[in-house]
Image (tube, rainbow, N blue to C red):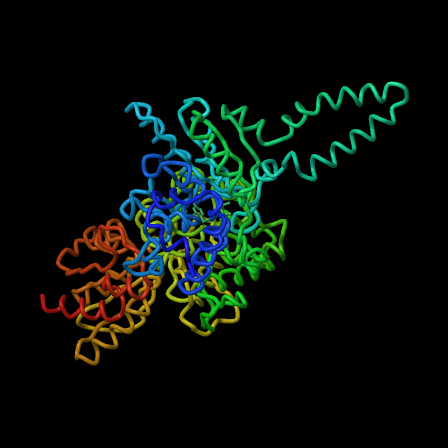
Length: 624
Ligand SMILES: Cc1ncc(C[n+]2csc(CCOP(=O)(O)OP(=O)(O)O)c2C)c(N)n1
């Protein structure tokens, strides 16, 4: 079935193929991708779009000597399959399997670890500078999508690259899509192709106009034709990249293997900086994905014949309920506005964007800018809610500090996908936010135990008038009943969910229900464990925590965050500051290491923060 593909274990095998066989290989790779991803799930559309590009790069360049760096890396499946990982590809994104992203520890052909966007040009430029310093003649190639090019880092790197003049190749993989349709002035500009309708229409219009000028019309037309080349240069993306110090090639058809190979072979003889503009189609070759590129950006298992997802699940996700609560809040208050950094659907804001288009802002993959943009809106009396995945808020730490907290501006930061996210692995786990936000003066931090509390926390945040964050997990809620009306919670107030005398488990966010289950197990085993839902990491409910600590003498904290500087640390500090060092405390959370991918349940089990792990830790704690 995979006549050519089964013989390719490395780029050396690929290079043995005749150029005319490569389109057949591309068709096999596409089928392989569909066969695999329809079972495991993963990033489908972007990978179907880069099949020819990946083949041509490995065929013409000399990996691993030449460095190929995929931006984000969600589109590097073909690269993995052709560099010795075909047989293990069915394990991708699974526990102890291949990563869904390029990873240096996985293969010498993965030149740089990725997952967060817009880093490829910086890394490739660093490698080009290193090659120069060590007298090597290898190439550094960054492959970046038009969506990832909206990220500030990419511009910073282009700016330095044009000035440094190292041997750098940037391949712009332009499919006019980010996850949703790409946004921004730059994106519209690069999609102005000189062969495109825009240019043809403009030319026609000008010709008509000039012909109609009496007497001198035809002379001017002649002049204009001569000027056409420079006019083209003026209007096309090439001129912009050339102004930045790059040589520009393109646009090329990214699915035309002979053309790609001819151009890449030529490039191997050239010195950079060079920008090659390649046009691809997201979802290429699979109709459901071509027709719905946003839906097929990232998918779970699906039925190949229909394109429909096979996963069952009736409980709404935290993301869905966040999106619905945003609609309610926006109906009630015209000052409520929503901001996303290229994750409209992922953050549950699709309906909001349709119902309140003027109050919805997609800033592109620009978390830093998005945060300061929100601060600007807040400074003018609006109530911005910036919805960003926890792991990507890391990008905007300084903006939260300098632009929001220092000016005490009422921005709500809604951190989706907080805690362990599962298949995307260490680049995407959102397990650090308590620690890197807790020390910012004046910032309130909340985490709901379930989806109902999430809705109330969102209302609390929007009405609070202070800088405030809430973080909630990836996936389905607890399936609890939802209160009809949203209510405002008292800031800094936790709740006792269960009384107990042997120890008290103080949990926060996604660990509250497992803590309750653990307490029930312990009860059956004759141990009386209380459970507190802390709700707030900052301000802590000092009165409540000190009181349960005093009465039980043993506290166990549980969080889905790194232990260093997290929630448990905050409780320790509180006890210490209140001369309660005699209270014994055990902290459960993420240890000082990066956590690999796997299902959320499996990872929580490994880390001992599921119900069983909490109960086991409590038993041990009581014995000690
Ligand atoms: C800093 C950061 N923010 C958001 C994301 C989520 N994300 C992953 S891929 C993607 C879109 C990338 O678009 P593009 O580069 O054009 O690649 P395409 O999927 O279209 O091939 C986004 C927003 C990310 N990986 N990193």
